[in-house]
Image (cartoon, rainbow over all chains, first blue to last red; front, side, top):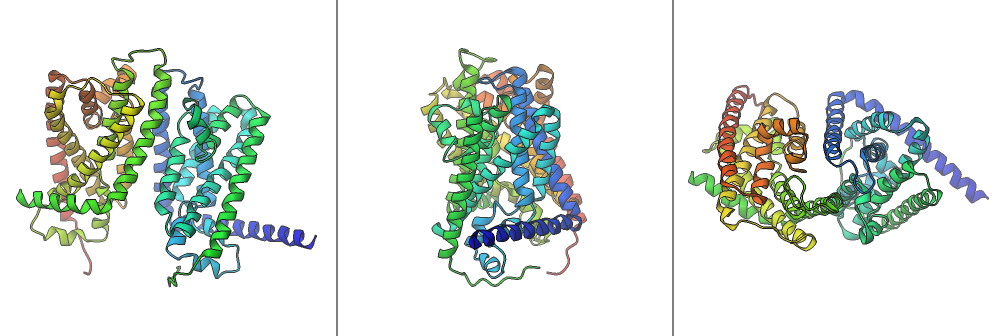
Length: 269
Length: 260
């Protein structure tokens, strides 16, 4: 009973700490506003190019294995919102491997706050705001109003899968010495695979995309659920997100125990 | 001319130290090819030809277009950094032309990038789809068109990079340029897939002479198309070569380096 209460208190404290940190991060935008506007707007323009490409493609071929243009737009809503959400809240999610490899973890371990959440939130990814804004605008245009609550849930679950996957790849640095290249390519790969219609994959590839490289759960399953809701797939997606996040936390925590300081001295200004 | 050849040679040899980087780059392109192969298979189901392209021609087209566009080394960022931190001042004193120095340096890296991506991609496509009716006599003409496509790409990229004299971050412009190559440049799909009005516009812009035209000549060679593409590529190279030179001259004039 006491242990349960302690654990609840710890979660509350971490959540409060993350919220405060996020507020400070948002304030820092004002300090770097030119850079923020440039990066966010270029990401927004980048996303527009992809919409143009798909508009051209579906103008010529109205359906690819039962996916039509609006399905592709729903896919873009999910991936830009989920990727953007992870980037805005956990801006360091792509840099964990580098932080561990370079011995920068010392800084976080020396502080009384939970280290993983601290690492993840200690950077703001400006371009992620462009993704998020683009996704929200696209959702308003292409997703029916009645489906917006479901979309919100699906985006949150997709974000958890992306975050968990990123933590797993980043934490491999504890065991491999450096997983920077693996993490970069892995995240780039999953983002790419999640940005194309899931309906074109079949057989072994489909299984692969629903397990090892879970791009199917990030956009494929959410789009299918938005088209036709199915409790079985919804619960499967929830369970998968829980498993990925759980595994990522275990790998990270076990890795921290193996971690040896690089005695790196640096100043954070 | 000899010194630029030597710069290219040294950088070519140095590049082998970064073989892992090239390898990961090629693996990523293979992933894109795999996705597009699946996508085009779904589109082609039951169809023999789409706009004059068979399925295998479409995938080999994509390989050639991807290999050209993605082989470009990231020298825009390098030039941007050199201008921002003043390092360019040291390079201006050297006994070579700054633009030609970067041309030689980036071209040598590009050859490795292109070759590795193309070979690995070709092996993958051969296993997934099979070959196509390649005209062996077109090889010499294709190499010439590829060289001109990469030269044109260099001058457009360099003119963007040199805007660093005025802009804080010209690399973002390079990002937009990349997306133009992907879409209206015909890297992802040939212009025949576009609506007619858009294909006509895209067909006269320089971007399509970097990706679309060389890739189309690769899968469907004709001497008439070759001479057309050759003439337009040369014209665009002259235009963008002059633009690059003007931007460079004006930029150097405003250069103000503090300290050392």
